[in-house]
Image (cartoon, rainbow, N blue to C red; front, side):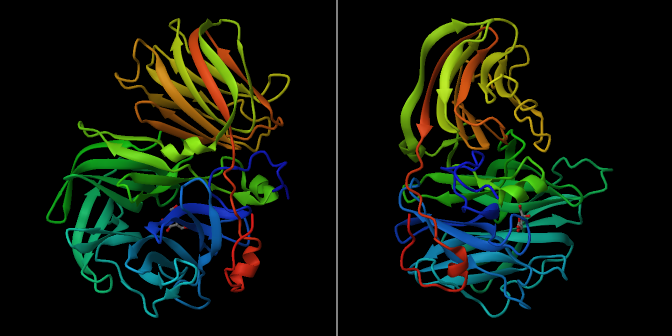
Length: 491
Ligand code: FRU
């Protein structure tokens, strides 16, 4: 096991428990003065089995406090094989969580709920399922998302219609108890390639309302290959039916899935995703942990119907010592050394390739220069290109090259502004124009690492260490699982 600080792949600022498995963010709600972040969690092993709902909360999105496990599968019960994904709402003094009850002996995961009257420390599950069966013609059914709109409660559930269309099914309720099925909010052929043997469905639908318009976020899933990617549909809703006018990928990287939304008290839409491992299961088994949430992101919808995202502004509070400060200059073709960074840093850069050839940044993670992650601009293709092929000398890490098309407004005078946040093995890249690319990589070289330029490029760079904002982890999840009283987590 290497979950000690010596495990430089373990994120320090991103929310995840110190050990074991995590997947989707769930139940994001602001309640009792706290942002609550629940998540799919196996507290016993770094594997996707026996999933519970883990729980952190924060007053400021910077300092996080781990709370006892919120939902645990009931042996022999309707959720015996997992408390799968869903969300939570704050309703007066109570929080109500809606989730997918998983049992291996049925193909659908019916909707059920649990409520808490003590700020999410303890939960009572309802004795019977809330919505026991899916509507006709569904071939996949899970992941409720509940929100309040127009004086009533609404719920979307992820589904597949006859296997060939992903769908978000709409229900409505006056009291969170009696739910009436309205029909598909949106169902669409999501571009799933026929002939792959699989069929398509949507997981974890989420909906953000923006002044008369809406953004429907869905995670595209294949019955054979599993999770594919995340898409956001932008459009308007009328009489329970959503009509999209545009769609786009929510993230251009390979390691981003099942994001969930939270409406902050100041009206901002915040979003967290799940970033899975890009290494083999044996390695994460050895490390004792798998998966992380992304940073919280702020989502906005532009006048012309594009969803843009940036790290939540609170993430600036994690900036510690500035380790790199390079004023504008022309570098290359020889690599220019920009300075040293730790394994967790926040970087801003302005890049402008000076030739019709890719130019950008290289994060060198082995002293002999043989291990590196390249983040470049390709002026000919009009793309940001990330090369992970040499980012780890361990063959158990996945290689790959990923591209983010630059919009016409990305480049002012050909210059592109970027923010790159690296925290252990997660890399999140944001363009100033609101596109994101998330990936994982696993350098074998111990930090500090070096930052260099690549190709002929004008470059301006600053980087700061990320400081971890005093996270309080629950001392022993096993004690919490055994029902220890929440007298206060320790740092
Ligand atoms: C998405 C997902 C959900 C499901 C959960 C199970 O990653 O497959 O559809 O509820 O994870 O952990």
